[in-house]
Structure formats: structure tokens, C-alpha cells
Image (cartoon, rainbow, N blue to C red):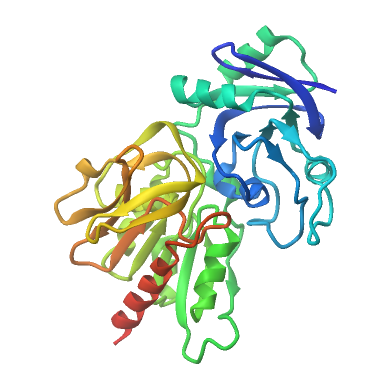
Length: 364
């Protein structure tokens, strides 16, 4: 079946459909990871986006029940150069195509994904429509232009949990577990797994949970998760974090980093085409150490807007944007990238150890 991907500036990509039939309008972005497509597809940070994979062959290891990062596929649509319809991996339970069909996700293959990536890099991320129903490029262009843009959207409400739930510490991690409240802005499963592996009892709460309710549970620390969309409209969450700062240790990841930056008085800006992949070099300024990181974001905290009591701790070596911050006198820090990986390298997992160490010191 024929499928069309038409961008709002009129660029047309024609390919073959896979997955479900249908039509979806969303922001079109690209991911530079060579592997990890199942984790990418289920990452809530991709809510409201059509993902273009730069690696040319996708689906060769199939799909299994263990490599998901949320309860469902989160992307709006999926674009690949070549789809593998006959996966070969001992862990595979079904093909990528069959999985996306049951999940209701429209896919397109056979397009020049390199040309699409180059176009986005030059023109910036923009809306597009992926359709198996409408074959008129001009009609699809108008639909793409009329669709809501990412800037100004609160997508966290679409992905946060509906009620609080708990994850117990991993077996063998010892008595007297730390109590961590994880504010779910679209949290990946591996965040609470990493905390539980370090002896934390993790309580995952909806993003709209007020600070007073969080503090009433007497947590040893609060974690701000990753998530989709623009951080600036999330006034309710920014105010919650502002009320938590100075009363409990706080650690933020990705959108959580942006929310923390806004709560501390900084500003955020939309990047031209964002950072999405598992191979982004980041430098820690205090040590000069460079790590390869997993990333997925379209906005960043402007380091120059942060108050004097807050310092930038990490920078992206590709474009020098802010990748981390910390308060100079309070137990508050965050990073823009994903130390929990899934997919990606494990260079930054020690940040969870740092958070645990801070919480234990605050307990004394």
C-alpha cells in the first residue's frame, strides 16, 4: 500500500505503508541511533512526533516484551529506509510490522531517510502528515500546516500516570530503603529500575501532584522524569518544583532538567532540530570528562539566563548547548541527557549513585 509523508513546507516523500492504516499529523524529527528502536518507540518523550530513523535497516531483531519503556507505543508515526519483515533474534516474539499494526501506528518505508534528515537539519523540525488514505500532496501539506506546533503544547498530561503507584527496592539491596518520589512527566521504566537497583523505594506520582502532597509522604528525594513537549506551558509543574527546592534533594532528567531550570529562574528555547540518538558527546565542565550519551529533546535551558546561584555543569560538544546544571548551595541538580539509557550507552549511570549519596547525606 502506498503512503505519503508531506511536510508543511511542501516537501513530499513517497513510500510503502506498514503497520496500521490511517493518517497522522505531528512534528517530524530524526533519531541517529543504530539500534534500540523498540525503546525509542515506547519512550513517552516521543509523544506527538513522527520519528525518522537515520539507520537504514530497522526491525531486524523483532520485538519482545522486555525492551519496552512504557505500556504502549508512544510515537505518532514511524519512517524507515528499509523494514525487516523477517526478524532473527532469540528474544523476538513478533515482527516490528505486526506490533505496530496492533498498536495502531502508521509507518512508511522506502523513503530516502537521509534526504529527510538533511532537510530537517537545514530547515528545522516541522509538522508533517503521514497518510495511507489521502494521496493528494497539496491536501496533506495544508493539513500539516494547520496542525498544532510543538512549541506551547502541554503533552505531559497525555503520558503521565493517572494515579500514584510504587516500585519496591530490588532484592538484596539491604534494609532501610531510601524513599524517592518520582514525578511522572512521561517516565521511562528504566528510571525507576535504576533507582530500585540502588535500594530505593520509588513512589511514582502524576505530574499534577502538588508539592504539599509530595512532602507529606516525607521522601528522601524527588526525581523529575523525562517527558514530551514544551516545558514552558507547564506552570503547575514548575510551581510544584519551585516549592520543593530547598526542602528535599531534587534530581531531574531531560524534561525534568528543563522544568528545574525554569523553576530556578532560567529560560528555555526550542532547538532547530533537537538532539535524538544514542551517540551525543557531553562534557562535564568541572572535570573535563567526556561521556557518550543517549538524548531525546527539542528544547534546552539557556545557561546564560540562570541566576548566579546556579551553574551549568555539562555542555553538548556538538552545539555547546546546556546539558546540566546544579544549585551551588542546595542539593539540586539535573542533566539534559538520559543517564538511564535504554537505549544507549551507560557512561552516565553514576548520576543515580550521586543522587543516592546526596539523599543519604541529607538523612544524617
